[in-house]
Image 1 (cartoon, rainbow, N blue to C red):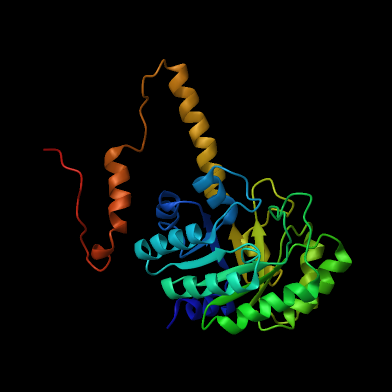
Image 2 (spheres, rainbow, N blue to C red):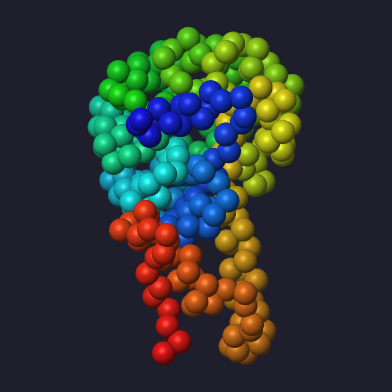
Length: 287
């Protein structure tokens, strides 16, 4: 069964599917200990790889290379990939989709924003004319084979949100995402307008959407949830604390629960030739 089919089956299951946002190989290594699926967040990747905000700096070959490294290290995990607006041009969007499906991505999210783009949970977003986005989406859907495709709208006005959600639900897209949805009542309205089409919900630290548990989302008939910045926000917070402590202690390292041994124990699991073995190579030696 293809990676796309596996993710599609998970989304269609009665139990909601969580996908944790990862921004580099280390964050994915930690997330892999707890969850079966990753969301390859554009926000996190732009921050980690470029040190820049997620406003359109990502070059698609960089994203493809990252997903390829993820798939090699995590052959059984769902990989849902944020491809923004398909990197502007419809032909480029299709080219990227072909690359991602070939290297083992499970699915992609294609948004209807126009440049300059913004994170889905900040002000200033602008959307393409609906027909222009639908043409791009249709081309992507005709290009993919088994890859799961999430159609995303970044509309902000309630009437326009519902108009676009209804239009997206009538396409061959597998899942619908309205990003930056502000209330539980809005989730209910969107669910009502898209019928039986699977619905994805994006929770982001400091974002516009309400913070809801998986149980609460499932009760709202949400099929999948992504946590775009869960690892990124935790890492930034922890690094601030660690560096501030280093300054406070005049450069003396304090005791930590994670050292070289613990890091190696986590990372050696990702060596592809050891995936099917009960024991993996131990890179740490007391000798």
